[in-house]
Image (cartoon, rainbow, N blue to C red; front, top):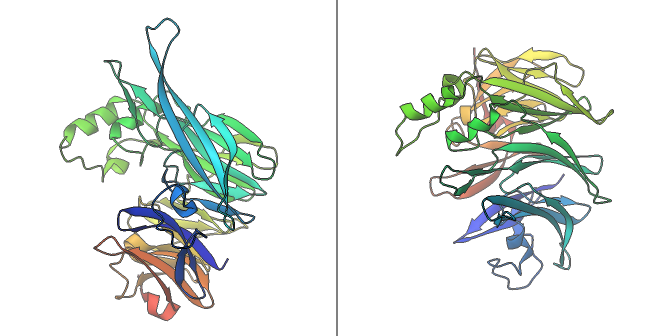
Length: 363
């Protein structure tokens, strides 16, 4: 790969851009001259309006859009909340856009994880609307009943593998007022298996009691991961048998380059493609999603650390980058491609040699 697609803002407008690693210059995914990238006539603008990151496959850019509406029952005594998701594809040369596939009854709005393998896209769809006691409806992102879908990008065939978060009390997670602990995490492919995990509690009151102890005007869920007695279910789709089965491993925090990484007892455990495991020095847990495994190194930008499985050494990042909350996204021509957001919410990309990025060893 010689570049990456990302979502960026210019003024009040958000659009998709392509960053070229060679020049470190970014251009919008748009071929229209003098385009302001501020309405749906622009491909770069249109493909990011539902927040999910667009992706490119065989020269076409794909993205998802979800519509929703409240419908009345035949007898007029109740209502239902109906979702309809469309996967669109756009030609980056001509700018033409067409509907690629329709997926009824689920939302893929704000989905942040998907995996592409062997011409197939794997993604989670959610029935994420709840009806309140007064009959009104609330829609939130990445909550509720969640299903694994496979979309063949050559034939447009769609398969629904069924409900993933199937514990009876999993539906109570939405009361945490966010998706950090409610969504099914689609972590990646390791040893020809696609891994998925989710959390649940035995007693829904464990979540309700936790929410009620906080400040309702300024909720802080920073310790919800440890203060609530979660169970975490780890499943995998066996790509050889095309069936979902329980996983033998703890739930992964990251799967990348056929490397499986999970956190346990204050340390990260890194398993290579052959199953050989190495363990980092003590590192605080990281609930963010910007962990990466690049050039054989596990990078935890928010904790300003990295772990090298080949040497068993854990390092801090250099002083230059220790407070940037960076993400290492690629290694290109002996430089690490990193990005971070400054105090003005501006995205920065840099190409950095290893000597400028990695600091001292954590004992």
